[in-house]
Structures are given as C-alpha cells and as structure tokens.
Image (tube, rainbow, N blue to C red; front, side):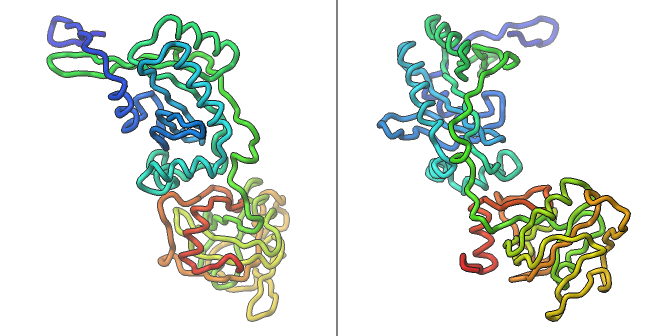
Length: 353
C-alpha cells in the first residue's frame, strides 16, 4: 500500500500487529470496520455450555453475524469454536436475541436498531447466519479448513487486521480470506416460526395518509381508508371485523386506537356510523378528496373501513418514540412488542380492550 506525498511515492510500513483484545474493542465500538453496517448486540455472550462468544452482531435484514477472535487457539480449536457457537446461535428465537441485546445495549434494542439502520427491526430475526473468524493473522492450516467448509456451504470466513504506519500515524488495514464479491454461502436457521415476532391475533397497524386524505375526516367520522394501487387496496380489504387498529399518520406519529366495525367497502358504497346510525360516507362533509368513481377497478379504488375509536387525537397530539414500528403498507399485522407496549402506555389501554 502506498501514499502519494509530493513528487515521490512513499511506502506505508507495516507496524506491530494489533492485539486481539484491541481488535475486540475496535469491532465492539465500530463493527462497520468489517465493511458493512452492523449493530453489536452482545459482547462476551455467555452460552449455555459456559464458554463466551466474543461478539454477536445483527444486520439491517435481521440476520445474525457471529464474530470470534482467534486469540491463541490452534486451527482446530478456532474453527471448532466458531462452528459450536454457530450451532447454538441458529437456535436463538427472536425473544432470545432481544434478551441478549437488552443485557448489552444501553437503550432498547428497537431504538438502537433504528439508530444504526434508520428503521425499526424486521418482524423476522435470525434468518441467515454468518460466521467470521477475526484475527491479526491466520495460519495455512486454518485457511485450508475454512476454504474446505465453504465448499460445503458453511457460511464461514476469516478477516485479518494489521496496523500500517505513516509519519507517526497508524492505520488499520483489513483483508478477507474470501473476497466479498465471491459467492458467499449462508446458513438459514431452523424453523422460521420461532424467529418471527408472534402475533397476538388482534392488533393491526394502519398508515393513514397520502393523496388528499385528511386525518380530521377519519377522526371525526370514524373510518380509515387506503387504495390507489393493488398493495394498498388489498391491505385495507384484509382488515377483519373486530380487529384492533393503531393508526400512524406519516411521517411518524401515532394518533389513534380503535376497533373495526365492518369489512372494507369501496368509497362510493361505504357507510360510517354517525350518532349511532349508519350513513353513507360520501354524503358527509369532507375536507379531503377520496376517489369514488364506480368505473375504477377494485385494485385502484379507495377502500374504507368503518371504525369505532377507543381514543383518537389530533395530529398535534401524535406520539412517536425511536424504534417504533412503521410501514408503507396501509394495513398490516402489528407484531412488535416494543411498539405495542409504548402505545398501550401512551393511550392508557389495557390488554382487555
């Protein structure tokens, strides 16, 4: 590696190799040194069999990355150790992962995830697993074993770090045993069922906004709506009677919780309950504009769901906390316990409602 300074190129000279305890701290503080955005959710994680996994991280898609430092292990020991840890990590459920993160992080997992990736974590965690051996150097025997395992689809790689020195300044250089553009095997972990947030069977997320929809219309007349495309119209039509809905008005503010009174119907046919009586929504005085052309295909129509509000507030009283769930879907199942817990507290809702 070279640095250009004036007319003469000057070499960067190799310095002492970093101690593996230093590598542990570097990666714990900044796992992006590995070349991708990661959130470290566990350091020195105690396993059920008594040993400690060096670092456990998660990526934006909810996949886990296991990082094990070579330290003074022999080739067989380091590879056996990372495979042993990997076999355990594949069994971790979503709740297990969040429990590990809670012990390690200084804020809720969901908030830390949003800090790093800019969004709430996905419903499914621990889909694919990556195993990485971190070392200042790796002997030829370890390299042969890693390459052999990769040929059989084991998602293991090794990354090396070294210091480079230039005019008294030190740089940390990284190189992978297998280049990132090589085909990388991934291990899909066990049953998807245990990796996904459980759904309680009643709570749904609603995104109300876009187009000329006005929240005051929905709040005062008791409805939510969506459409203008297949994804959004199908979302609204999937809402069952008696579902409990939590309404988010983009960009990010939860404003209401209510209960669905009837399945969705097209705007021109929709009725809402006003003063205890069902009445056509199109006959009401509305601030917004809601498409109601009977000639429009169902997928592109505006679909309206009548709602009985448990608590509905104006936009300026909207609630949001970092790490809460949001989606572009007009309606979807709300699984995230963090969001449900914060909303229940904010709107003073107990589980019986």
